[in-house]
Amino acid sequence: MYDVAIVGGGPAGLTAAIYARRANKQVVVFEATNCGGQIINSEKIDNYPAAPHISGLDFSQKLTEQVEELGVEIVYEQVQHVTGSYGDFQINTDSGECHAKTVILACGTDTRKMGLEREDELTGKGISYCATCDGHFFKGKDVAVYGGGNTALHEAIYLADVSRKVYLVNRRDDLRASADLIAKAKKKDNIEFVLGATIDQLSGEKKLESVTLNTGKKLEISALFVAIGRVPNIVGIVPGLKLDANGYADSDDSCETNILGLYVAGDMRNKAVRQLVTATSDGAVAAVAALDQLNNPTPRDERYKEWLKLYKIAGIGLKEGGLAAAKVSEYMGIDYPTAVKYIDALDKINVAHSDLKNPVGHSVKIGSLQDFPNPDGFDSREGDEFLESL
Ligand code: NAP
Image 1 (tube, rainbow, N blue to C red):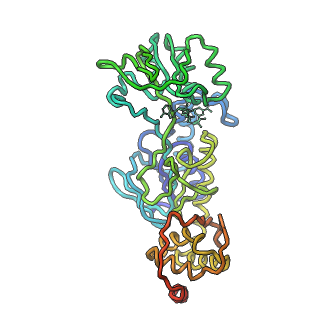
Image 2: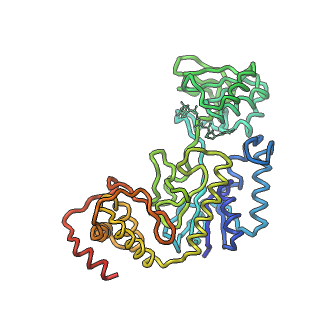
C-alpha cells in the first residue's frame, strides 16, 4: 500500500512526488508515456523564475532525475481507473492493480481536435499538433497554423524560420495570444494572418494538400499545425469525481476534490492560470494536503461524528446540507436518503455557508441542493435516533 499515488508525470505530478517523498512517504508515479508533460515540447521557457532560457526538454529531464534520486517509484503504465476512497484507493493500470491511501491526479490536458472529416486519417500525413516536433519535415514548404492563442503564435513564429510561408488562421478577428507574441509574429514577413475564418474541409489524396475555409478560400499547404486549445485528460478515470462544465476537475484551494483523499494538480484543475509555475505550485499544494490527511488519521466514523457535530453547531439547513449529505452518505456507507434524514435532524436554522473547516482542517464544501434529490416523507426523529445510535 502506497501512501501517495500520483497519476501523471508532468511538472505538477513530479513536484507533488518531491514533496511527498521528502516527507518520507511511499510514493508511486504512474506515467503513460514519458515523464515531463507537454512542456517537453517547448523550445525555450522564459517565464519560470530563476531558470531563464531553459529548454522544455532540459527542464523535464532535470525534474525527472530529481524525483528518481529521491527514490520515487515511476511506473510507465496507463491508468485506467481510480476507485475507492481515503485509506484505500485502487489504481487499475493496463497490467494490474495497486493500492494507495491518497491519490493525486495530475493527468494534464490533451490537444483539442478540430472534429473535421479525415482529421484522424491525415494526422501524421500533413496534420500535426506540435510544430517543434514535426515542423522540420516541412522545410521550405507552405504550411498553416490554426488558432490564435499563445501556442498557435509560438508555433507560427517557429515555423516562419523553417517553412517558406505560414498562414495563421484564427476563427476570430482578435487574437487571444499575448501582445509580445503577436508583435513578434507580425515582424515575420512570411506569416500571413487569415483572421475571422474557420477551417471547414481537409483535402488531399494520400496526404494533406489543401484546406478550405468557411469563406470559400482554399489554402494550398503541405501541413496544418492545429493549436486550438486543450481538453482535460480525465474523463472517466475516476467515477464520481466532480467536474466543471468544460470537464476540468473541481477542487478547493488545497487541491482537494469532492472525494476525500483525492487531489488534483496542474492543467486538469478548474483554475484561471495554466502555466508551468502554477502546475508546480499545485503539485506542492496537493502533496501538502495529502500529507496533512495522512498525518491526521482520524478514523472515518470519528471524522464524520466530528463533522456532524459541526453541522449541528452551525445549524446548517437541509438546502445548504445537500453536499454534506452526499459526503455523509459516501463516508458512512449509508444511502443518500438516510444521510439526508440525518443531516435534516440537525437542521435548526437556514444559514448559508460556502466553506467550513472540519475539526481536522479539511474543507467541507456546502453546495446547493440543485445537484441532489430532495427526498420527502422523512421523520426528523428518525435522524435523532440515528445520531444517538452512532
Ligand atoms: P488557448 O489560449 O485556449 O487558445 C485557443 C485558440 O484556439 C483560441 O484562438 C481559440 O479561439 C481557438 N479555438 C478554440 N476552440 C476552437 C475551435 N473549436 N475551432 C477553432 N478555433 C478554436 O490555447 P493555447 O494557446 O493552447 O494555450 C493554453 C494555455 O497555455 C493558455 O493559458 C496559454 O496562455 C498557455 N500557454 C502559455 C504560453 C506562454 O508562453 N506563456 C505558451 C503556450 C501556452 P477564441 O480566442 O475565439 O476562443
